[in-house]
Every structure is written in structure tokens, then in C-alpha cells.
Length: 575
Figure 1 (tube, rainbow, N blue to C red):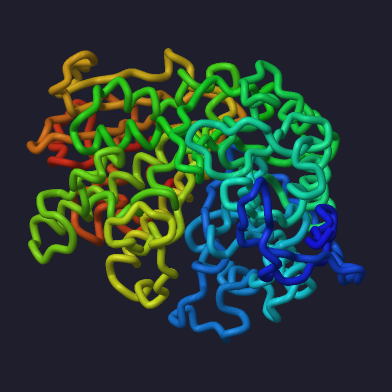
Figure 2: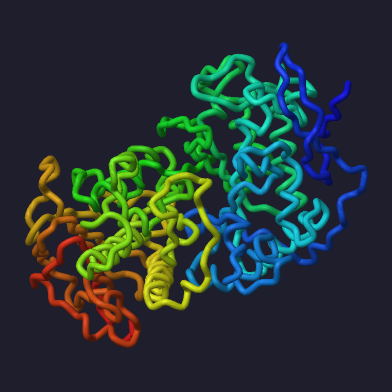
């Protein structure tokens, strides 16, 4: 009676403040309180805004945190704009310059600021601090302005959402909203091993309705384009924590008349400190997934500790995981916000980071050794290159394009705001130019890289050194060449019909690649060689003729590098 509760369906809410201590089962615990407002949400004129409805296979995704993206003074934004939705909107040209057409925002629901954005306490309103005035009404308007601006530039807005647990829970006595409304209906009664937060009973009718209503609210009222469901394996659990073969919530989302038109992505990562493994996720050919195996296998290959067959599987769209759906349902990443950043992946590899499969390239932490630095730069290029030439959807992590570091920490709490001054360095200009080039390549060669279906077996051939058979089962084999034969399609423009020959070398020594004979009248053009200096390691329109290579000629693939060739019949047209 003495503890007011937040209406779970309120659209405009007040601040989360300290409340009277709770007395539960003889234990006194601190508590927080927040109330909904009776005020009507601010009206908004969407004008001619339209959902871009980009095909899944054409996405290039950038994951960002609203606050950390522009909070630093180096962003050049006023204090009431930095770290807000308006701040994100002000950097739209940055996304466009990278070739990004979808931004995946870390959770923006109201959350406990001590625990972080992955611990929400309300599902119907954006975080107050993400609005310029620090209140619920300003956050609502600012978010809608951001979405509208993104859509105007052809960029979709995807939200990471957490519906498996909340900032409430018996573990710390928090009672803010639904825990006090009807704890036994909304939450799983029995504790799940390893969990210190209240786990929602997502597949109970009352919780399922709450989640569906929330998702529709963000689509209808905020014009959001899709959702990435964090801790997705918990969405499959029943009332006693058991796994369900046909979870009603996931099926309802897949076939809902509103939600089925959006992107729906399952992410196995858990902010609860639980190690979720990727398992056969019920999908109805509607659900996509964050591909954890992609990250693991690519990291292991580039540090020389994986069978080349694992890399081949990831390059071809992870058929072992998505055979019933297609490669477009695989959201690939090499780094994410919950682990090492990309630059830290090639700079730190101490005993505490064994699970990260990182490699420091010869020296731990910051280095002034030119050999180590050159090797790290080459590995960064390799990670980005493999991400973009693999079938599936490339997902960039905030700051990976500009050397953003957390000093080797994997803790989410140790992340720092993006330093926008870094954009002026030659390193960042090089990496961002490379990403833009690869995004344009994916678009130009959509017949290969932007596919709903897997490549046909007859259109792929694999080679080792000098066109030899790959040593698939040899753990010492660290060199692989992939020949992709372009399909002859009368509807495909002549400009895109050339074959591709891609080489991957994670050896400490160079390897020799012999290029197969191209079609009559064609030549091979080297588009990328990650071992070369800038300019020249990727091809621009001004220097194409320099990179012609004849068929059956040998090409030295340097240690820890990747090379891409494309066959072209009509060079003047390509130029």
C-alpha cells in the first residue's frame, strides 16, 4: 500500500527516484519508484515519412549506443544535443559515408542507470536522458525526429530490445512496476541458475500481450523498422524455465500483421553473465539471428587456430545454421559491444581474454614497434574484409571504424564515449574509406554478396597453393582460395558478371596463389590486397589498369593478408 507502482502501459513517465525501503520476507531492501504521467504524449507530424522497407539481404548495419556515440565534446555538438537522439541524427552523413543503411541502437527503453541499458524497467517510453530537455516528452519527440531524418536518408532504425528480464527482481528487492502488479504472472517463479535478475515469463498470456503491445507501439507510434531481441534463448522458455519447441511469443511475432513487416533478429548474447550457445532457434523462416559462430570462426582463423573448412562455411553464409532460411538471415559480426573492440582484438590477448580468441600480434597492449603496428593494421583490414565478402548481413560495431578502444576490457561498464577527433587521423581515413569501398562492392556485386539463397555448389571452387586441393582436415593449413563463378543471367548487367577469386592467408609466411584462367577476352583485376600500403591496398577507379593480372599467373599472398580479384571482360566500361 505504501509503494506506488509505475503503470506498465504509461507512455509519458517521470524520473526514477529512491522510494521507501521494502520489507519482503523479513528483509529490508532499498527500492526505487517511478510514476506515469496523465499528460497526453506530445503530438507529432510524420508528414510523408515512409518505412524504407529495405530487403534483408541489402542491409549494412551499424550498432551504436545513443549516449556514447556523441557524448564526447569532440563530437562538436551542444550539451543539450550530445548524447541524445538528436546527436545521432546529426551524424547521418557519417553513416552514409560508410555505406551504412541500417542503424541498430542499443536499448533505448527506460532503464536503471546503475545497471545499464540492458536492464529496463518500462517498455513503452524512451530513456529520458536521450531527449534534449531530459524529460520523457522531449525524448519522445527527439526519437521521432531522429527516425524521420534517418528514413529521409534511406536508413532504417533497428532497436535492441530486452524482454527476458528487467531491473526489478527479488535478488535486490527492486519493485518498480510489474513485479508489484502481479509478480507470479509476469515472472518465472523459480530462479534460473546463474541469474540475479527477475526473469520474465515471456510465454505466459499476460506477459506475451505486454511484449506484443510494446513492439507494436514502437512500430506504429515511432516508425521503427525492426528489433533485435537480446538474450533470445530465454524467449523460448516456459513458466518453469523449460525450453519450448514452439514458443507462442515467437510465433505470434513472426505472423503478427504489424510486426511481420519488420526485421526481427534473435541475439543469443546475455547481459546476465550467462553463456548462451547458438542452438536451433524456432524461426518459421521469419526470424534472423546474430551469428556468434561467425565471430568465433573468423577470429580463430585469423590467429591461425582454425580449420580452413570453418572459414569456408562462414564465407558461404553459414549453411550449417541457416540451411532452411538462407544467408540473408545471418547477421555477421566480428566484434560487439559486450567484448573486445576491433582494435583491442588485435592488441590484447592475455590469459583473462582466452574466450575472446584475440591475438596481440606480438606485444601486449599499446605498442610503438612498427612491425607489431603494421601487423595489427593488416589484421584490422582482414577482419573488415572477411566481414564484407561473406554472405550474410555485415554488422559494424560503434567505433571499430576509428580505432575505438576500451584498453583491453570486455566489461560493458568500461566503455567510453566515441572520440570524434580520431576521424582526422590517417588511420581512420584509411579504414573508413575501406569500409565504404567494400559496402559499394557488395552493392555492385549484389548477385554474389546480397543473396536470399546460397550460392550453387557448381559456382564455387576451392583451392590451396597454386590451384591444389585445399587441405581441409590439416590443422596446419592456413591458406584458402575461393573461386566464385558468376551466374550468366540475362537480367544481370554486364558490369557485374565477372568471376571473383579471393585468397585468405593466416600463415606467418607468404603463400602462392595461381589464378585460374578467366573467360576469353577477360583479365583479372586486383581489387584488394590487405598487405599493401595506402594508397593501393584497395582499388579506386583511377588506378584500375595498374592491377591487371593474367590467368594462370602466380600471385604472392603475403603473411596475414587477404586478396580479392575480379575478372573483367570490358575494362573501359568498368572504368
